[in-house]
Image 1 (tube, rainbow, N blue to C red):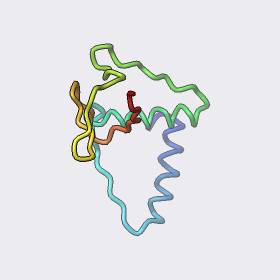
Image 2 (tube, rainbow, N blue to C red):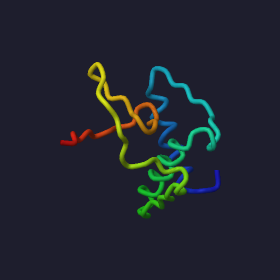
Image 3 (cartoon, rainbow, N blue to C red):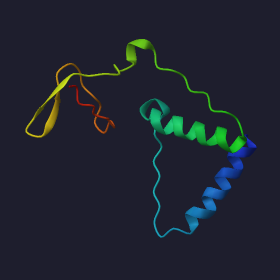
Length: 95
């Protein structure tokens, strides 16, 4: 490992892992886990005192900010779009 900061982090992580009863880690390529890659970059930026760079999504990939839906059986069904599983939403009732 060439980067001194990563070498230090690896050493600290190795010490902590030895204190655990059980530990497992798998290698996942960046392209298959963009959220983890983004979080790792933000953590490294924070640790080095740099402001994290956030690349905006291309316009074609940005989800719309408002959706239309209807309540059926106590659940909101979207009329015009889909949200990824686990998306946090805020509901405002139109009057």
